[in-house]
Image 1 (cartoon, rainbow, N blue to C red):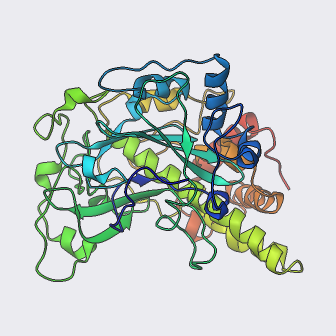
Image 2: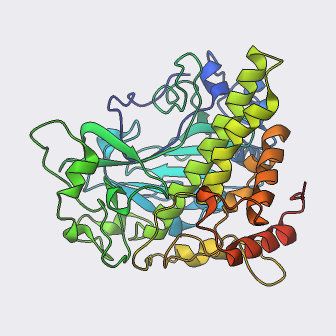
Image 3: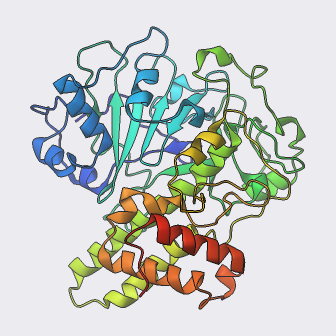
Length: 434
């Protein structure tokens, strides 16, 4: 299948970049689908039909069970978000030139990103919709939906346009797909200066986050790179050194973006700081799980006698640390969003018998009130290979029971450990003690 838009030439673009899966990369072509109408080969369709949210939606569109409404300025965007159960409040706006539709992105026309736990939707004014659906066993799949009114609308999967740039592997012959959320130093046109970029997670220094993004919300004396463009430095660029020398006051504590661009063109006028924080954490954990799955399968394929326990430890421990927020940068002032995303995120539960949830936010000194990732409820976690999942569960029990109080987990108080353990026992039926 030929990608409709020019391949992105700039490396290190700032955006939630969504990539295709290893399965997609290996496919030599994708043929027009049969009964689903999805433009993808029947073999690929069968491989993901039970789990891929976009494939499921295409089947519902083809059967007439679901219809998408086309609007003049937004196309299918609003209707698509409803169909995929993605809240409009999750809107974040990236103005650095990114995605294959980079010519349509600028500080005056940012790209909107919407997301839930499993699906991401990108919208560029007068462009196609871009989607990523995370397959729990195969990683992310990349799609577009042309903004042309037709019945039923037809998604297209792209097989080899993305993974080459958005790869977690150090071996160019074995690509591992990943989701990227990057911070760059954008110039006044939205181009990443010297193509330098930093991956943004909850471990990132606050000051180095969100370069090339708009950010709405309050965060006290803390500073970030959002809402700003910069002049290129005279020499080679080190983002950390460059940002340390900048006065970032002008872009701080912004609650109204109208001075930057026409916000009426978007579903909401927000690019919520809490949504951005959640997005950075979530993509990091999903990427670690994808790497673990792929590397385990590859190692056992190369050597069926490989030490499985050693592999589980090597690949599972980074997941455990990320899920327990080891290394999370502490907030020095409270953070508050503007869009209502925080309230909607917390409503999505589940809750234990005492009303507690792993989606409860703190936002005073850290992201979550109970610092264990809600990603533990995702289908991608449930579908981890037994070797990896058992290791993660065993280590969670060791840490939460207090058996392991080593430095990576010293940030967890006794009250934290007890609360998380209680929530898990009530809300995660397969969580079991070794």
